[in-house]
Image 1 (spheres, helix red, strand yellow):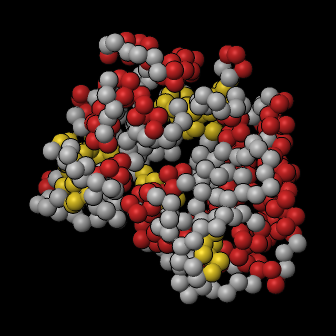
Image 2 (spheres, helix red, strand yellow; image 1 turned 120 degrees about the horizontal axis):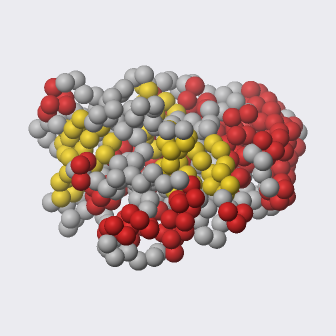
Image 3 (cartoon, rainbow, N blue to C red; image 1 turned 135 degrees about the vertical axis):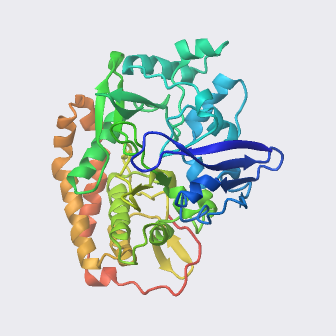
Amino acid sequence: MKTAPVWAWLEGSVAPVRVGTLFRDEHTGAGAFQYEADYLAAGGRALDPGQLRHRDAKRPIAIRAADREGIPGIIADAGPDAWGRRVLAQDLGFEPDAMDALVHSVDDGAGHLAVGDLAAKPAIEWLDLFELAGAIQRRQEGQPNKTRQLVKQVLSPDTALGGAKPKATTLVDGFPWIAKFPERGDPMNLPYYEAAALRMAKRLGLDSVTVDIQTLPHGRSVLLVKRFDRLPGGARIPVASGLTVLGPTAQAVGPARTYLKLAQALKTWTREDKSSPSSAEIWERLVYNALVGNIDDHPRNHALLFKEGAWRLSPVFDVVPTFIHRDKVALAMPFLSVSPTQLTAAVSAVNLVRAAPVYGVPVDTAQARLVEMARGIQAEWPAVLAELKAPTEVTLETQPVLDWSAQLLTEAEALTTDDLALKKPKRHGWHWAP
């Protein structure tokens, strides 16, 4: 049985406190978490309102092996995903399991939690972007390492950040930002596509992360994303991914992994009612993903933040617009129940507007908002690219965004009352028909 302490940076604090202990059985993969008695005695809150809501220092909370590899979701969110695991495997010389990944990664994971001996964790290598670019390229090529010192000098950075794309934390004017690099095989200008999508979201009134672009030698570039889980001075903000909010059953594609379930789960986390602002914002965000053709809107690309005593939606992040001409688009998660036994992720103006009432948005309001957002993209996309000083070819490469959103705009403007009529289903079955 592997065990490790779990630490948290409480609201406004720059020093961590021990909140519990993580357990994982190496043979079965099952895990458990047990709260620290001193933490609870001091009035410590539950780390989440889901898996870890029962505060008990005497009995551990069991986590099935199939549930995030035996790790509670909100703790797993603080650990590395595909890219970070690859980095760790190169450093450690073996494939780390979920517990190893948390214990051996550096202390820069999402949110306010860390696992393991903090004093023994490798230091974060604050490299500048040019050094990072070279280090990331070496990591992608899987260059072997002989010693830890060589890793620090040649193969840095280590990372605890989630996600599949190469990334690391860098400092911009003393504040941590995430540097995201294209994966091998990605379009060279991919950072501009994502930066444009995120700035466009902000222009349309969505709460979106602050982003910038840094150019590198040989025509390369890197996307910079200001971290929304950090505060000046080193304080940290709790984060829960959409996957954690949905619960362990949402790990696989199925009826538990939908926008409908996400909106429903938000009520538990945010303590808002059916017509909550968060639920309506989920609808706006799925509509925006639909308009720009972002089909990578999976649960880990949504998140909640815990601020001022409540869980609320984080800013929009990880939006990669289409750079391929499309006649059809299906989102990563179904968002509309079209019959008692069928859900759909298929994007069309009628589907987007028909879905709105479930998220607390009336159909007439939804149609007007869809048209407004689509017109905004048509009118302001070129201005966003100019603001980013994007290379001339990016205008041509992102033309599919304008073409696709124009198609949805035409559909939205032509909608009639009859088009939007949809009987309320009596129950939700599962048959994804994108």
